[in-house]
Length: 112
Image 1: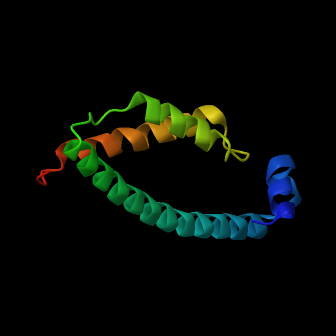
Image 2: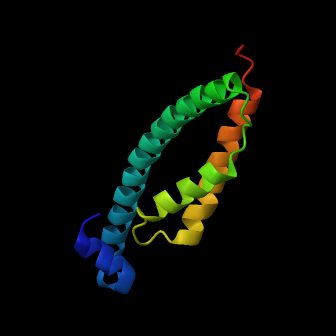
């Protein structure tokens, strides 16, 4: 989406006729589909790293849950926020990602 389209969406969609709105909707959804594919691949890659981290933690007899590390991650990701995403939404998204990362680590049955 270019800046003009974004501004129109934020200000006034009535500037577009029905066909233009439908075309915009189609293009926006197509862009979201591309992003969903990228996000899924990145989440899979991150999960692989989380699995390896869990194995290393187990070999060091460390717990799966590390509140200090999660606070560190939270601080770090807040630096990357861009509108329209806000801090509380990003926090909720990452809480879910970290929950799933812990679950992957706990459910890994690979030996130490």
